[in-house]
Image (tube, rainbow, N blue to C red):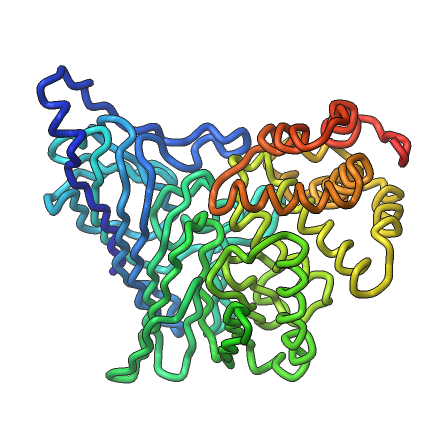
Length: 457
């Protein structure tokens, strides 16, 4: 049985406000108004911590668990929403008292007995269970809980995390996580952050994972299967590397795994200090998913892949995982920079100038279907222009300001918005402040323009 727990405590500000007329309680919004997913996320509160305790049976696909969320109300709440797709909801409490529940599609509305004051920290418990769904995204890719025999992996971009736990599932609300997963003995359960405990009793093993740095829910993952795991502690200040590889692809993955320390060292030199306390990768079998995803701390790869894709996914730890988009319209800030990271790796480590990658991307008509900062629909947020033309925007910025200023700008950007959220407007303003050159034409032509500009523009 799956339980979501949210804790609300009265702060000093709440006591001080007793003498004043309090605003009437009102339901929190059922969405944050994302331009592509208007009902995704919820208004009226900010989550600071998720505690998920999951019990999973790979043979049946059934999930029984407790989930605990700690959050702070940003207005006086008479009710608040959580995003949840499928699963059966049981007992719900707020501040330890039974709360009312309403469900409509993916909206789970909790009605506490008493209003939650603005500024109060709160906790609620939602019990739920069942077989989590595999969702189909707007671009027809699969997300949510992906099951292949007794193996499974949870991938959440852009909305799939609501398939396996209730929460505020918009990238603008990041939180710390503790995830405990119990599976049959002999299976591994991999998640984000650091492995803090592993205990076996009665033929089942419980793995405890702690992710202290804020994480958007779409980056949370659980991978269950017969993975072979390894923790390399590193030396000289290097972050620990935790890898999990399906035995079916272990031999073919060895050469790729060996490159992670070099990629991380290069990444820190190029993008600034690594933003998390560990790194690594999860490598499943081909077909376990249709794509790789930059799940925080350790990306998921569906089978061995190229060095360029590994560089791309590890670069996301800076661009997307630490500096997370304010809305899904800002996706190019993730993918444009990660794509350009692969161009830079080839330039620095393989002697292939980024100019050549730019020329290939420029000649690919698929990259000109729309402006990267304005995908037409939800189905387009992972479209080719977001990647290829997004990387071309980054390259044009490099040409405009020069190499020295460009790399300082990139490192300043990852430091200024570390563990936060940023929009396209934030980035363009940030870049403009760091150069004497007027960048307006660059943004108009490459980031927002509908026409194909000359390559030297």
